[in-house]
Length: 596
Image (cartoon, rainbow, N blue to C red; front, side):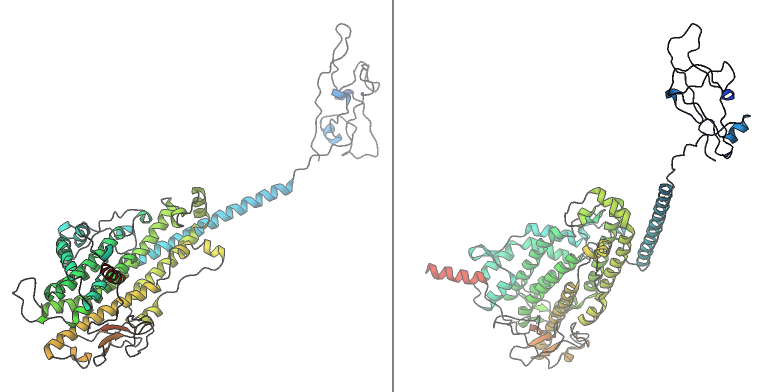
């Protein structure tokens, strides 16, 4: 039934009228004329109000009404529906009906659309909450799994216990670079250990310069020697969140540690040339200790391990020319420190240092645990607002509102991607347990590669913080190979001094000089290092990266070049490695000729 629209009657001003005459006409439903059409239904009958718009001044009584009842007048003289017949009947009067006024539309389609949108929004919120709960639960379960296995995962797992300075090897290594003076020669060009090796093999014109360098840096070398006796390492980093804002462990000191390694190896060469092999062996052990402390816990990151590989390889290259003429005796020298052969005990300990790969492998594992912690802490700080996308994207400016919106929309996807990244780091941490490079390459996890743009947006850790570590892994096994070659060469030298000749095979070194013949880390069949005692230039060698035994082939494009990346990796037992003339020597020689 249409809703009753009740007429509202208001006073109407009129022309001046006689005194006491009413200025408005009071409506009276009882006195309205009823116009009934017998053919109309009761639902359609309404009150008909006479239209006075044609004669607004009519004030006389309604002819159809009882005498004296004025006509009802509305503003504007318009007809007003008052009530339906049914409603009028309810009120006690039978009324005629006029056409009903239509009711305005209620826009039901808009209400339904708004309701559907609200339900969909609530559904999205529910799905987002469920998705976030699942992602967080899986992430925390993975972290708990790693920690239950004894692996460090969170930042607090890496904070070291305080170490007194007198027991901290890194403390002495941080002091030593400040005591170091740079060695410079002809036209202010630095003289590197490799350059000095070339000089020793040729004219030895810089021997006095190196001697002065060793003497002037006695305090720095003493500090390095002191650090070797310390087993604990703490580079005094402020381990606080966010880790993304911290400098990488010892990065500021890596350049100084490399200089220390070069100076220590120069000192070892100088001691050997001047006949003090005992001090030469001690300097070589000091150089290896520098790498051990660079790679020491808790601040070991991959960059630290790579720096250690470089310093260890430099030390091996120094051992190569020393080994051929190394003097070894059974007795401790009672002569001056300026001269004296090395003892068997010294050489044996140096061999053990080179073959002790437990800390080397442990450092590789720990550096990937540290990278995993770096990832977890960065993710946590991103969700807590400690860091933003700007810090993760190489300095690109990202508004804070975008940071929060991204976390709100795709945060759970980022947590699930963090789990994939954690598995990737953990897989590479286990690579160090592989017996060879081919086995490690087969065991290394594949790099996650999201395809489409939405997949990349949902996988920031896979895109930003997961580079390929194949080259670093290969360098790790190269460092293992050269360390084993140097240790075996020292054992061959000890055998040669005892027997007057080199052994016919490496098996003759066991058990007096080696507990076992070292394995070739590039041999897929876990074979031993190769040995060519009768070659024009006697060699120890590894089959190198291609895994193919090429009979010790190493020739490069020029006679003074060694190409081991595509051929075999050699160790020259006579110390006669082909080497190019240093550029500074050619400049120095030309300068002398010009003066003449």
